[in-house]
Image 1 (cartoon, helix red, strand yellow):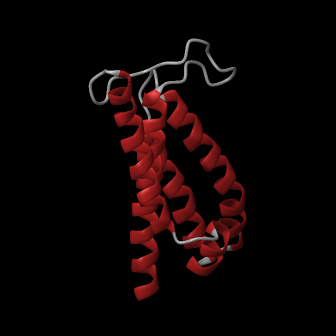
Image 2 (spheres, rainbow, N blue to C red):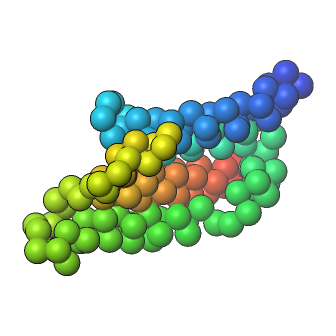
Amino acid sequence: MKTIIFKTASVYLLPLLLLFSVFILLRGHYLPGGGFVGGLMASTAFVIHSFANGVERTKNIVKFHPGFLMPVGLALALLAGSLPLFLGETFMTGLWMDQPVPVIGSVGTALFFDTGVYLVVIGVTLTIIFTISEGL
């Protein structure tokens, strides 16, 4: 049964959990976390919202099919892994900017690879959840 408390809480939890998932994504650079865990956290935010408010309302928030995130994330991860090849390095060698970016810190190919994984995990998880929910 969907209660008014659960519906109200899910509206506030969605942006908080998405923000926390981005924190986990960026934190994975140096500490535990990263694209996979951050992507699961973001997916969890949308799943909680869909349980409380229905799949159709959650789909209206997303605005596009989550399956679109899978090829975009794969392309980003492949590009991040292949970029060192153009500079004479081996595949998946970490490249880093000379100057740190404020708030984020050192930016390198690992961040772009993790972001690709983040997008793939969100795309796969939401596609599965939305497909299962439609069948119910």
